[in-house]
Length: 114
Length: 113
Image 1 (cartoon, chains in turn orange, blue):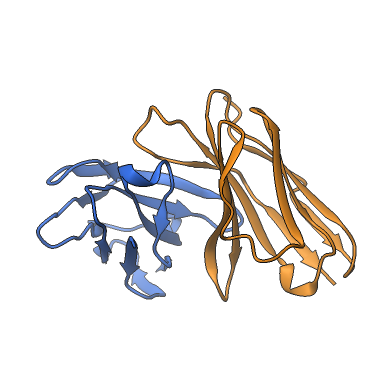
Image 2: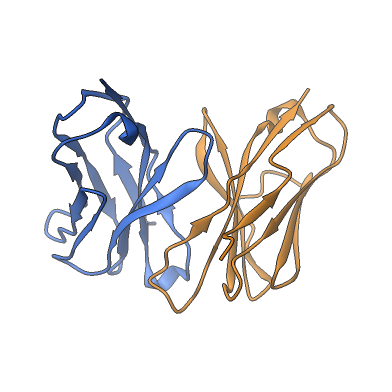
């Protein structure tokens, strides 16, 4: 299995621009998680889906952030408009409800907003 | 709510030294416990896990024992290598919280030759 795939790996954009991060979970997994990691705040859960339905988005920082999962093999995290404080590494992870809850992480997208 | 507390780093050791990274947790149910490792520039990888009290998880020379009486899951390795330099995260999953994981703040380990 290819594991969790994220794209792009690096994104540099200017303040005010729209940014879209993409994730392909491991085939057969029914949970998908989006995290953000910064030096100051550590690892934060933004939102997670079960069977493509958003379950908990309480970690989404503000209305500028939105996430979708149109099907079992694809999810996006969008920031519009982006701000310098959004600079971070964004991770996608997936897991299977039939396992003992372990999550499998993608390599992350490093976002820099200038 | 559930929480995980790890010792703050960085932890700096010489090669072949003994490693302990402390982890304690608070949970209302009977969680599964995990250690994840993050190497520079990479995502988190599952290192080991334990699903019930007194279970010992082990992998790559690392081990941790699920201690319900002390609500702890300390990570140990008898002889660290330079290649073990990474950030280590303790985490728990409560059966009542779906597949969500609650992570500790991470502990950076630096191993010097």
